[in-house]
Structures are given as structure tokens and as C-alpha cells.
Length: 221
Image 1 (cartoon, helix red, strand yellow):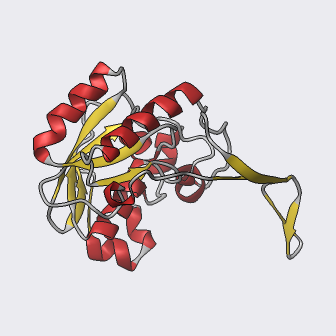
Image 2 (cartoon, rainbow, N blue to C red):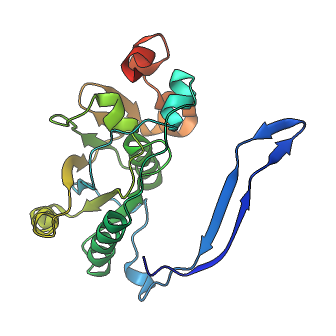
């Protein structure tokens, strides 16, 4: 990855108040911005911007926040890491940012796509209308899957076709997610949460169709 790792630590045994916690590997790296004035933050989205997923649709729920907090299970393997995809997708996103083509950017990690979108909505104070129809996985996996090497970027509407064409030419998976605007995060007919709801309570991140009443648990099977 040509990535400077400056320190690290792995604690295989940890305990707090007599209760064991999971092993904790940690690394620290250093990144360099050639021009801080064109960096992309998670809260820079503007009305009318187009949201684009760089990377594959979510599908992997093993060891995910969704599986732990909604279904109540801690099992399965963690997502695979493809270093080639990490470098390729990361280089593409960095290039677009440095060319001033991206107004906001967020990596997809713990919690999956919908949590990344929620954090962008809260940070920017702008809502978003998102569609995930046509994905090759169930909705809960697309929204909460923690597959690696993925980003959400917001780009001006007049650059969206160019960004998508560039990704396609580079062999990078992508999906047009939707448009920035309004005062709520809305995903197809699955959820609609206002910015105020998202900011006021983390419980609002899990709508009724994922409330642990059996629907989510059955879907996770």
C-alpha cells in the first residue's frame, strides 16, 4: 500500500472490572495532504450534489455492528481485505478530491453504508434521498454490510457523469446512490429519518423494520 506505519500494538488479553474484552490490534499511520485547501470532509455536501458509492454493494454481515446490536449475535468471519482493491479505490477517490471534484467524502466502516450516510447528513446539515434498488443482496445487507474498500462521495451534479465514467474506465465498482437535499435521510421506502432525529438519538438509526422483532433476525439467517 506504500503506507507509512509509524507504530502499533496488539493486546491479546484485556480485561476491565473482571470482564474480558476482545483482542485489540492497533496501528498508527501518517498521511500527507499536498494541499489542505482541497481536502474533502464528511460535512461538505451541498444541495443538488450527487452521492456515489465507490466500491461494491454491501453484503458482509459477519462480525458487524448490525449483527451485534440489532440481531444480538457475535459470529461469522470479519470481511476480507483485498489490498489491490483498497489501493485502487483509495487512489481513485484521492485523485478526484485533489482535482476539486468532490465536495464531501466518507469511508464506509463500522455500521456500513447507512451509518456513513447518516454521519454525512448530520455533519453537513443536508438531507439525502437514496435508492438501493437493483442491488444483488438483501436491503439490510446493502445498508449495514461492512465490506471493505468502499467510500461515499458527494460530487456536483455536473461532474457526476464524468466521475462515473472515470470509475467505469478504471474498472472500479460504483453505484449512483441519490441526491443531497431536504431535511431527512430517506432510503427507498425503507426508512426516512430527519436530521433532528439522527442528531437526537442513536436509536433512530434502526427503523421499525429492523427493530429486533424477528424480521431482522430472520433476514440475517
